[in-house]
Image (cartoon, rainbow, N blue to C red; front, side):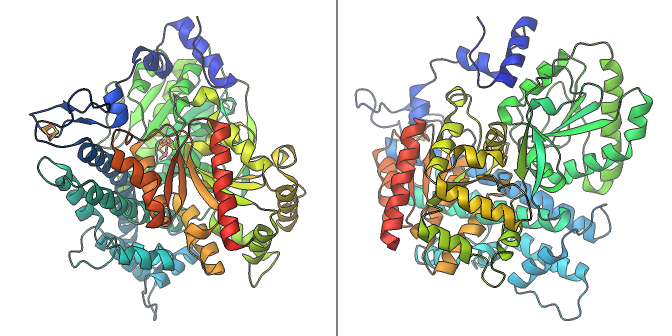
Length: 632
Ligand code: NFS
Ligand code: SF4
């Protein structure tokens, strides 16, 4: 019997997998059932070799580990380690971009500054003096300020925290002793703290979670986004094509998967330069498509089609039409090489710390970016030659999405309505209720929830109630595939108030259609853009972010990265809806603090709900309460 799956385009390929006897994540999930209850509750500890210890949440078995650690201690330590995994990924990503940027400035890597305005904005925010300095000198100081956040030992708050944190929240974190100074030290200390025989105090551990949330938000997401914008340009609104139907049978299809635009921008450049070489092999050209967050980066800046989200990263290979999938870092399933083996598809890994058995490894160094990108594109062209005669199955599903809603792009549209006070029209509409509130949809597609259409159902329910949605990450792929990012969605799904606002904005933007009701703000590191927008709104109103009628949601949690981003949002004072539950329910203390007590500290609160209608209702109730408190 065919496996149940999430959508039509994917179903076609799951069916193909079953005919061909190829295993996918859906099949492996089923064979993992039932998954371990201790693991789900977070009460399993492997921090030392007297264990592994497991605490029975019902009090019938062991209530303490061999060393005496309680469920509260174990759960909070495990949670902090998840955060470290997430923050390490984002800080690693940011460092990787900053180092490429430095090499560019030293004339050693073939990249350039694309957005001088952003450079000036960041440099002045960092307090760098311009007097007569060249752009290169200013940029070098900016890069050094970033690297200082990974090395300083003087206890001063991180430069990027001072640069990007909203005023009132910065003050609040200062009062709570959370102004982190050095991302690497924080990560080290969190690992140290959670190793056997150190921190056993659940509250102290949870405070450390907030610290790592700030590390992630500022030395990870914000830093990466700033440097990527300076190097590759700040996104502008445009329309693109999405879903698996963007593959083209007669072209060399290159799927770019992972996270860093340092690699993918170069591949894209060389794909266009080598178009003629591809044509000589009989192909009609080269078709570069994006998967996961690399897809988001490329689509926001270059209009590259968004082929699929994380759950489709192995599915897309089942088309037999992908000639090469090039990956860099994060969210890459090791299974891709196994599936690729069944076709002519080449999987190319590029990072020394991300190798997969069965893949071809081309070490991608910014210094040799041109040669390596050229080599990789040629590998795809060669693979295309091998494809001749093979059957390909490309699902026909394809839709259109508006993308590129950077804060700058949003403000550009708003300035056309009120050039001196661009946020005023938004605030007026929030006050009038035309915009009842706003929700950020972030994170991944969950293989456990995808067939419930969790994200789409929640989104539609919120739009009906005039809640504007912004989105990033793989959730953006889901919304785009559900046609929620097309202008037609506005009349189809929005309440009257929101509809009117989006029509007016479309007109202001010079379009003859409304803006869509779900705004694509980028990849997961671009959650920094959401925080910037919220900070600007709160600042304009003279309130804290926690007072705004807004919320965050990771409707289909998968990655540790979503945990660390979510914690940053909690520190910013947001209600953060999550499904499935993070692994905290085995600890009464962690559960109570994160879902209740934290609200009295940062204003943020975690909210777990797996039913889409109930989750939307919970968020609406939260927005109603915030509106009431503001007297609107
Ligand atoms: Ni975000 Fe992007 Fe996707 Fe989830 Fe992975 S690609 S960084 S973690 S799976 S949204
Ligand atoms: Fe067990 Fe304690 Fe060792 Fe964890 S640290 S495995 S609870 S003995």
